Length: 192
Image (cartoon, rainbow, N blue to C red; front, side, top):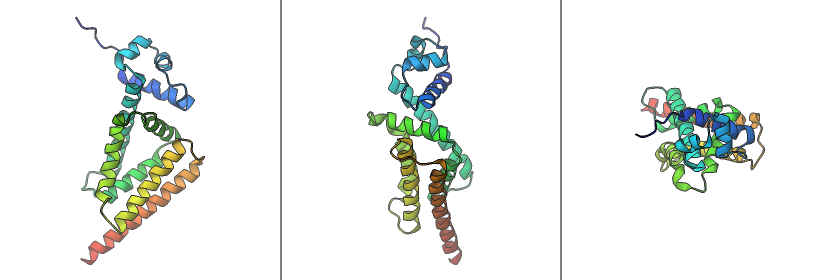
C-alpha cells in the first residue's frame, strides 16, 4: 500500500517564502525549509524532490495569487488590454515590499532553467501581446508596463537601490500614462 502524503504543500511553500525573506534567498536550502516547516528533509523531498521544484511551485503560487488579485481589481466586465494593464499596475502599487522581493527572487532563481519560467511568460504574454502591434496610446501603455516591470526587476535583483517611495513614484507615473490612454480612448469613442 502506498504511503499517504501527509505533509501540507502550502505549509512547505510558506516555510520556503519565510526562508527567502529572512535571508534574501541566500539561505534557501531544502534543509532550511524543512527546519522552518518543522518537518524532516525526507518529508520535504517527498513533496518537492529538488530545490528547483520547490522554487517553481512557489513561483506558480505567487503568479496565480497576483493574477487573481489583478482580475479581481479589473472587475467582471469586459476588460480590454489597457484596463488589464491598469489593474496590473494598481495591484503592483498595492503590493508590500516583502511580496515584491519574494516575486523578484522567485523569477530570478529560475533563470538557469528557462522551461520553469513558463508561468511568468504566460503572465507577460497576456499583458503584452494585445498591445504588440498597436501604436499611439497602446504603445505608450506597453512602454509604461515595461517600465514598471523593469524597475521591479532592477530593484528586486539589487542592481539599483530604489526606495519604496521612488518605486511607487515610477508605478504612479506609469498608472497615469495608462489612465491618460484610457481617457483618450474614451474621448475618441464618444466622438464616433
